[in-house]
Length: 146
Image (cartoon, rainbow, N blue to C red; front, top):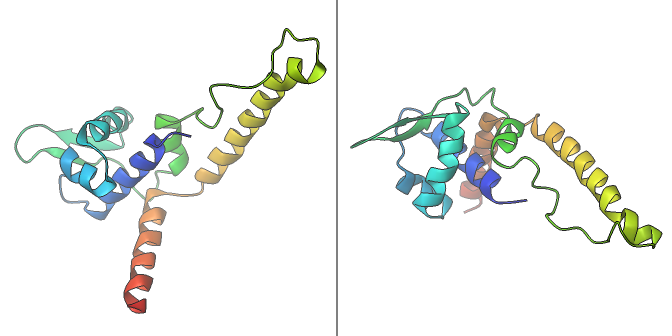
């Protein structure tokens, strides 16, 4: 899996946390701990899917363009990372006479496709708001322990 999914979720949860404020790519990048160009690339995908809105110029940036109580992590995954569970390379050679080598690629493809279905079904049960709530609960626990 690539990190675009995690960056997209982090960015959307941050925007849900500050719903009335525009966030620049620099601000989001600092929060995510990556560079602004990478944020702009991912936010462009999220904008095209309607998850965020943008404003150009001074005071511009990104603002949440969706309802965080309804947007699921599966929707985000499908937008930025669909198909990334399956590796780009698989062992074996379909031209080999060995039963294992000749069939490994097809069997592994099937396994990864099924895993993707299970994974996205799981992500369908998690919203941006629920991630934000988990973060808030976790930060309260940390403060109490100090």
